[in-house]
Length: 305
Image 1 (spheres, one colour):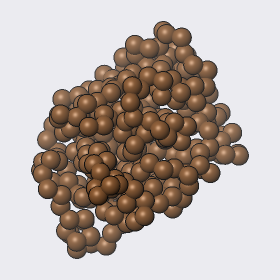
Image 2 (image 1 turned 90 degrees about the horizontal axis):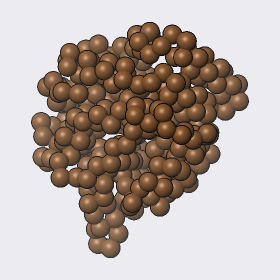
Image 3 (image 1 turned 90 degrees about the vertical axis):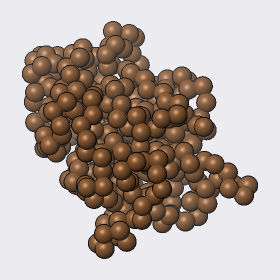
Image 4 (image 1 turned 180 degrees about the vertical axis):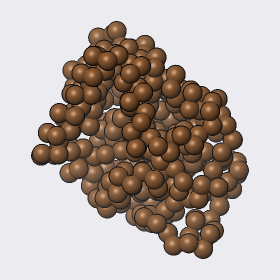
């Protein structure tokens, strides 16, 4: 079966996806440390965002299904565009196609100011402020072991490496891929939490650009679904993998490109069990965006980070 490439976010680590990978037993996974993050911070670092993407591509022994979060999702999107022969599908959490014009220039100033703050104040002070962003407010509801694990991941990084990552892999340094979305061939599933209104709106616009892109919304969750709804993420990855199985001479992915409305099944107590109906039929509520699930459908048991 096709392996899964997990790409963590800024100040993250391969362990970000531990709970997701636990629901994908028997499936080969590739979980690298991204440049600038422990223990790569002291190694020679690429100069540009796309050089990082090309380095990831060069390290892959075979095509993969990508699962990326935030910064890792943006790298995964770039990988699908620059090296389409290596990406058979992708599940991207909190992804942006990029910025242009004044918005890009403003974000560049913000990225640079954040990088400078990391070096000047040190990791502890920066992480304490970083965690207070409204983007992460929903994470305060996570079980203590999960929240502590996320804090430990953030604190293990070297300040200079984290500053490099902010300057080089920040949104302002990512090329604007908006025009390339229409030509994407591999299926992309974009996941966002309903409380993450910014990325839910971004994903909706991206899904309008290509029949290969489908957006899904998870109720009761915020930005980091790898922590807040790992079973939902695993289910989306498994669907991508299952769709690679040939059906009557062509893959389900080829059929899906002809019919964008094909629904992603909602999760139940075991991600390996039969799919549930989409939420609109299961709960009697109208379908929001392209799709979504209720919080109570997720596995909310505490998991070690």
